Length: 411
Image (cartoon, rainbow, N blue to C red; front, side):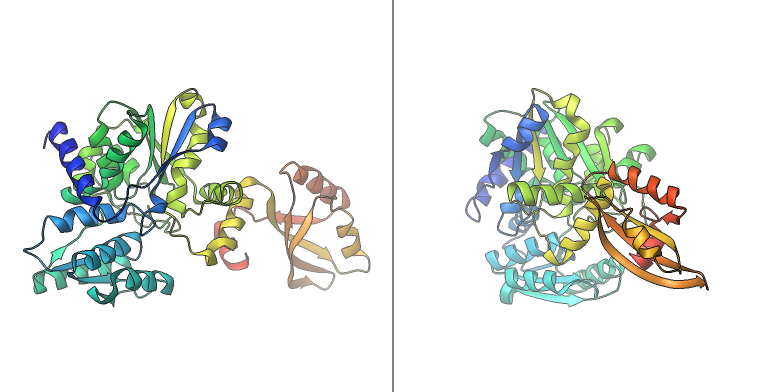
């Protein structure tokens, strides 16, 4: 399909969607615009009926199969499942959604809510590859249509409706678009629509660099094991069809952001703007800090791809953000077992320092004990003074803040 034909197909898909849900807003963000000296706009896919862009691809793929097909199958534990469920209910067709047994109840319940009686959920496998295999086997046996979350031309075309709306709402092509990347459905669709008429930045989590590694190798490659924290973009292998549309992008247009760093934007957007974003939905916004010199004076669109955030994760998100920002650290402290030692340690704390965790792990000797201690402060520089005072007082300690293996067990 030529670029012109693809753009027309995306426009046609977008027009068909208007009978189902309204366009998501494109909103200028004053806070970010002022900070970066640019016109920063947020494409708010978190405000779609299922709080992500995934229903677009599901809609477009399903409408092309109906009325000849009335059974649709997918494997997903997140936004794709909810988009498929929503569309099954809209079209009045039967859907079977396969999810891992470990899927949180919140996601199962939301998928049931969107699909109603039209959707059946089957929990299969501890890991997604088992879930996917079961879904594909069932689909072939039952004669259904398998709905890929990204590696499908109709899905890519449907996700490109995001670009159609951006163009119409901005009334022109933006100078720069920042996109999150998982399997590549959204990014390949938007790039295929706008072509070379604007600049792109593609953002991946450090723990799932499917596009970056594919560009290095010249073909999709499995980057397992991956870090699943940024669940909306934690894909081990980019799609064959999506990579075919992205294989010519420059490697320096791909950014990799650490999972902890992404958390700083989730917290900031919640506290400053009152916007609830999931980790994948925050990636494009966090990337602006790396693009400050490139975007000054430009019109920039960040796609906030989703807002399906489970608030039970908020303590972990805050913890990760504080650790990345350098205002929270954890230490194993060797505490002398003598009167006054604890008081001596407490006197080292500054006026802005606070003890967030204090736990005796064990007595390593009659005269000493190991203590896990977490310290929060207001500025990273405060730790320089604190550690200097610890050294001066002769305390022995180990900073375990960035020791991921140890942190899993004691933090």
